[in-house]
Length: 79
Image (cartoon, rainbow, N blue to C red; front, side):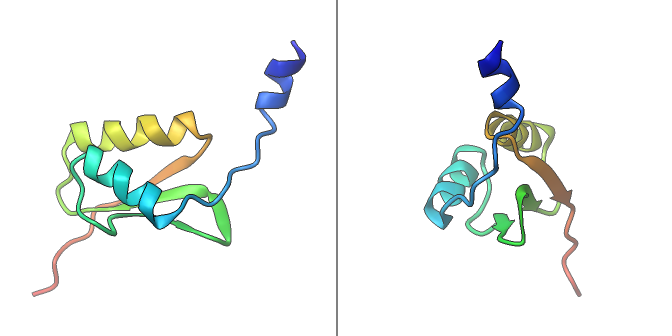
């Protein structure tokens, strides 16, 4: 029971650029399309135009396992 209670209090950590790039590659993203902001470590940002449901699900699964909240930004190309 104590373990269950403590798991709810896990503090998010900053993941290295290499870790995020590795996850991005596994999920079919390009370098730099996943990042964290040091001011809000609990958030994982995914910026990708036209991401597939599979790509979003892959990143979401990884984020949830690490107690992160995924923020998805559907970035459009500027003309």
